[in-house]
Length: 236
Image 1 (cartoon, rainbow, N blue to C red):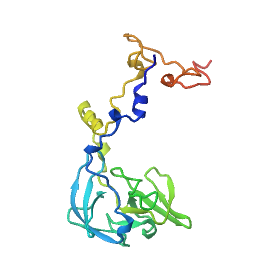
Image 2 (cartoon, rainbow, N blue to C red):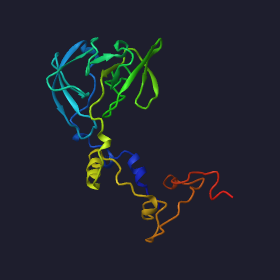
Image 3 (cartoon, rainbow, N blue to C red):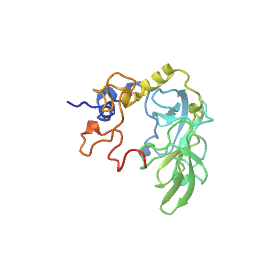
Image 4 (cartoon, rainbow, N blue to C red):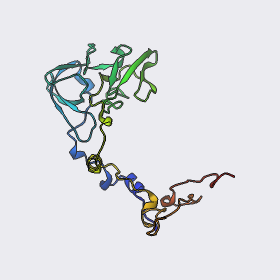
């Protein structure tokens, strides 16, 4: 009888492998489009274990509260604006109102969705050009994408740059880092597992198995390793 390997079990989306959302303090997104032009005061800067970038808690002039990704250079007590035309760090503007060459983050894909792109710590995008069909933006991956004029974005660079430069010196640090987001860690090689857990697993020996090509009509639990290769072995 076959058994799901761990990658298949995680992909099914059961409660065991879901990200624990109760550990998050909230979501960083733009305020509703219906709010119009409002101002906000930075009340606090917080750390969220579910996200790589710090959060800034904003108290808006219309009475609402919300989080945004804290950009570099802001501090508690400063004022930001939403929907205006002032290009200052932390402000939320429509892409059509942002000059070319400006650094932005948390870009909306569809106007009003709250921001979907460029949300990791230390990342930023850049307004490349204004075209008849929309606004051309250079993303952190150097890929360029055209957005609708009415999409919004924050001005600046997300704080937390250099996060990846700090070495992870202990396995325990990585354990807690992965456990917070329920990431798959540590990653065990297939041939190091038992036969019941993986097709490459074998008995207890130094040479546990040899990765074999997956058969043409292999069931899902056997589709690992070399999938339908045209040829195998050493070239002669």
